[in-house]
Length: 93
Image 1 (spheres, rainbow, N blue to C red):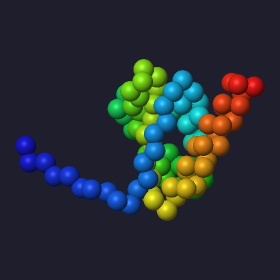
Image 2 (tube, helix red, strand yellow):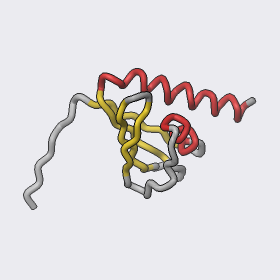
Image 3 (cartoon, rainbow, N blue to C red):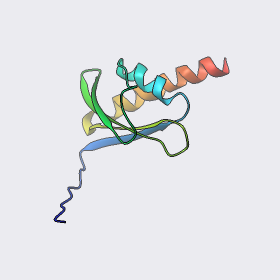
Image 4 (cartoon, rainbow, N blue to C red):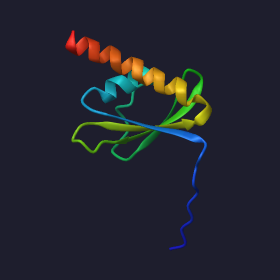
């Protein structure tokens, strides 16, 4: 095989995993993510930015990787964190 790789330095890469990860990411993206198969991906838009979601999960639960332009990294991180904290508050309530 003649394979070439490219090292990407200008994108963020976060992971979210666990029993509420699907609900959290659907809330973040404001879209249905049930159609993503294992190791599949979907391009979505969050707060006017493009983000790619890859469905993975190594813990036995659903899990997702999210990728996007580095200039949006902090905003996306905070959005996912705040959404996750809201779900945590509901669970531990």
